Image (tube, helix red, strand yellow):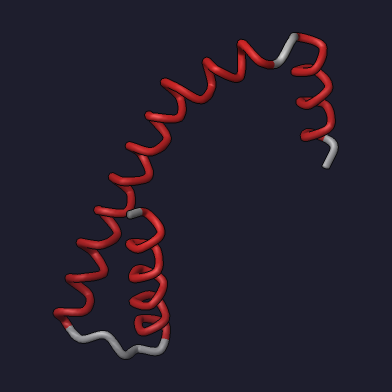
Length: 74
């Protein structure tokens, strides 16, 4: 669902960048933007409630520290 909304959003953004959106197009872009934000927030909340706790059970403190160090360096 997120990918579908994102694809529509990108298409509308391209039209907007080319000054090819009419009033209805701008309204659709606004509505789609809010919908996309809502879907992304919901997705993040689900990950925080299920995926992150599962990772805590799978990764020990030393591996976690090593991953953080590697990620922060590039």
